[in-house]
Length: 364
Image 1 (cartoon, helix red, strand yellow):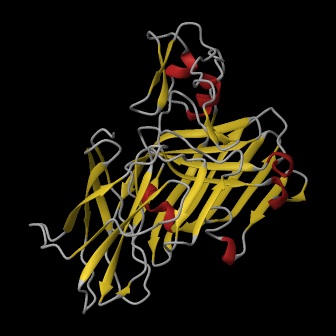
Image 2 (cartoon, one colour):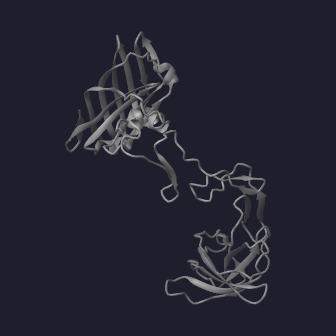
Image 3 (tube, rainbow, N blue to C red):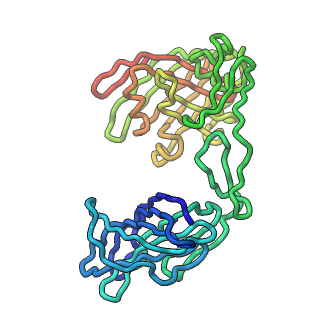
């Protein structure tokens, strides 16, 4: 016999003779030996001429047989229809319910199927009609995640959900206490103040060093900003930025590509674009350019239309243009951090103050 179980589904009827309604609930309770009673609920069909309904029940891995219940119940206070259906539970513990609407002797197509029990996520088990069904094993590697972050991701293997090892949250920092927070869905690393200077810093260029336990890593290069302007246009936000930084390390965007970020005061990324190395052209010694065609503005580089790098001795000038609705959040921020990554070189201007007007933000 089955324990009491509640499950729900918002399915759609297939449209054949009549439009039906969504089957959305079934509660099973024990009945006589080898039998159970399910209270099935569904929304009534909006079609005219509906005289009654039928509820069909099938075992997992099998098609439907005869109807288990037929009738035309009065609506519940919330407008739904319901019926108590006696059926024989499958030995697998999984049954599927469906409802059809009748106009005279003619039946509609099936509603969405409602599983009762614990279906195998690594098996395809569905019916589009009472006798037309799909029963097959999902390919190895198909996800069957149980929504628990800390026990790692599960995948199908040979028709069975295979649980991998628990998630490893250990970092490379000796002074932190590492743990897994299943509610928040993340690893936590708590340490006393000064435990890891790279992690205590608000420098976005040190984020990777913190994650890798490189606590003594040096911060990013400072960008001397000429201007960062975000102007509201009908097509979105138009960004223009120019600044320079000093680097003694060789830089070649045609090998490393480039990454542009804008961050809010809390460190969250409000805009990000990655330019692939193959998209950057070397124009002459120390001069590099990326230019997007208008059709690429949003789809390819998140709206970056032009990015220039020009080196004079060890001083690099960066000129940036973009136009995209993806910049709308950035345009509303009172403070922004501008970050430029080129290979192992990271430059940033932290916490630029932005003067806001109705259609323009200017940050320095």
